[in-house]
Amino acid sequence: MNSAGSQPARALLLIAISHLLVSCSSEGEDDTALESATEPVSETDTDTVPISTDQTISFGTVRTIEMNGVVFASLPEAEVNADTATAQLGRLLFWDPVLSADMDTACATCHLPEFGYSDGRQRSAGTGGVGTGPERNPGQIGQVQRNAQTILNTVWNGINELGLFDTETAPMFWDSRVQGLANQALEPIRSREEMRGDNISLENIDAEILSRLSGNAEYQSLFDTAFGTSEITMAHVGQALADYQSTLVANNAPFDRWMRGDADAMSEQQLDGMAQFAQTGCADCHSGPMFSDFDTHVLGVREANGLDTPDSGDGSFAFRTPTLRQLEFTGPYFHGGQDNDLDDVVDFYDNPNNSENPNVANNQLDQDFRDLPNINNNRRNAIEAFLGALNDGDFDQSRPARVPSGLPVGGAL
Ligand code: HEC
Ligand code: HEC
Image (tube, rainbow, N blue to C red):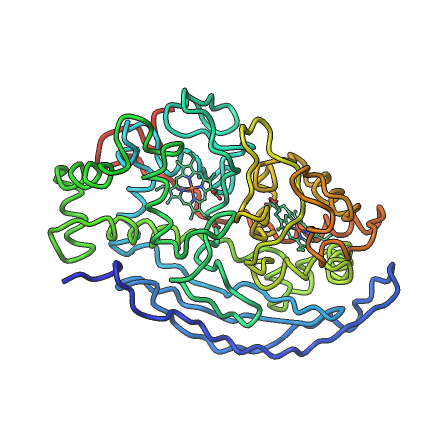
């Protein structure tokens, strides 16, 4: 029986009904304007949603409030069960360089716990590279054209302020070109710059990986147990990786705790920043529990360093709005790691009428972006303080002691 995951024909919709209870508006730019927003309480039903056959994440309450005309929503209070056969298998695969053609690069090479499951680099360096994180030297193939996205909370990609999302159609990558974590997971294995290199062709890579896995007695038995069949498929590989990544959540940031009723969780400056974030218009795009509308927008960010050809994103120089969670760990920022400093990113929004990218004319810039007001120092500091309330340092940073291939855990570094 094919269990899990290749055909998860379920529409995994989480319905969390939110009531907007607290409304708070402020027209004056410098008002803190929060007196009436100190008790954020809205009720949603607790539900249990299957992520795949034998994994469930129990969803607690999604809380919402309205402030300055913007709906803020916490992440669900999920209890993650990382102890399922598919997630455990996925964890080993994630850390095992056996998935790269030359057996030197694992998913974890570019998605490291200490960098919030990103890699601390402007642009990632895949197969053939030597070293780890920012110190890694790219090999002959060079660097990937983009900045590594965080894996944390990707189980909620696509979630909106009502708590609604669909695991199968969740947008993946900076240009949303792939849908769903399980499909996404097979892309890096096939990508020349990330894990495939030059020694095995795109045509042959799947067969090579499957023969390695089925030729390894430990993997064969783990796949057997996880999927109830002796035949290992790429769909199983993708599903196991997706199930492990679904356990990597960080949903107890000060913002979430404040939303759940802990009035001391955020400082006054952070609360001011939340109001300013709403009033400035950041939430036009950075909305919902992930602070992303999961849509693509043209911002005219300059090209990444060292690219041979411009990166046109989805083809029109639009990129997907990134989450604003975990920024403390995940710099550099923007699709090509253009800015190392969060200060510089916020300053970027101070002059939104001029494209910084020669391939993007001013009139192509997203209207919501052009409509942003000037950001004075007070506002900038407050907004940055609020971004600080979106960091949760208490996420799973564990790595397996060994992987079934016997290769170095996390790749040959
Ligand atoms: C060479 C570095 C590298 C390796 C190896 C790598 N990734 Fe990534 N990952 C990236 C980069 C860069 C992006 C953004 C790429 C883009 O937008 O085109 C990314 C994006 C992702 C995303 C999308 C997150 C989102 O919010 O859309 C997921 C999920 C992911 N990787 C998982 C994996 C898995 C699973 C593996 C192993 C099978 C893996 N990665 C291997 C660098 C890497
Ligand atoms: C029109 C939609 C839109 C608005 C409005 C907007 N952003 Fe963004 N934001 C984006 C997109 C799209 C990106 C990615 C751009 C890229 O990489 O090319 C981004 C990137 C970022 C990043 C970098 C995150 C990372 O991990 O790389 C931060 C921080 C950020 N925005 C904060 C803000 C703040 C603060 C405001 C309000 C002053 C704001 N944004 C307003 C769409 C928007």
